[in-house]
Length: 246
Image 1 (cartoon, one colour):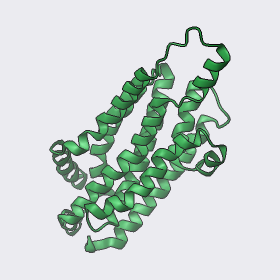
Image 2 (cartoon, one colour; image 1 turned 45 degrees about the vertical axis):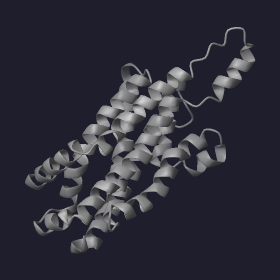
Image 3 (cartoon, rainbow, N blue to C red; image 1 turned 60 degrees about the horizontal axis):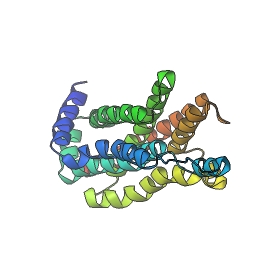
Image 4 (cartoon, helix red, strand yellow; image 1 turned 180 degrees about the vertical axis):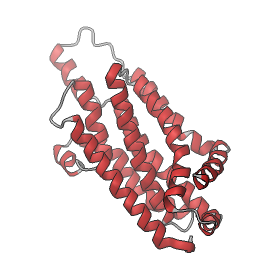
């Protein structure tokens, strides 16, 4: 626990002093709120069938921005943090001091996890979820946040510096962040992305909004949990393989 606290304090100070990281946790729920306001349209006098067609094909801005945040935003943030530790030799020092992979990951990710929780709650408010749905959506968001934190950390470990981490992280982040949005308009893509945690976040949000769905909630959470387990294993392998080369 001492190692975790030391890494946590180091990362907390670094995050507070870095506005580029902090803005990631503010901009996405703010965008969702603003875009929701812009999409409020007065359909008075418009035939019902046309209104139904327009609203049916109109993406949910909260779900879209939440998925982009949990997928795209956090992967690049976490990859950059870990890659910076490698570039500045901080990670090498920590490893020589006996810090284990799980202690390093827990210490660094705790800061991002806490900030991600506040952002997830903000999304739940903007999405106007209430009662049990509020906490289910928040829990789904936090599960997605956890997956992206671990994936971003793995990418950061495998990178030589911050610049290379962005090159590795962006392609995955784009697929995980924007894939679920495109899947809303393409059933084939939805089936391809079905086993990705960000797609299941989208499924859970749609389930709550519709009051039900084809995929039960427990199955979606199970898929997200399986994603997280696989990603944690990959992180430990990457950390052990990189060794003191970091």
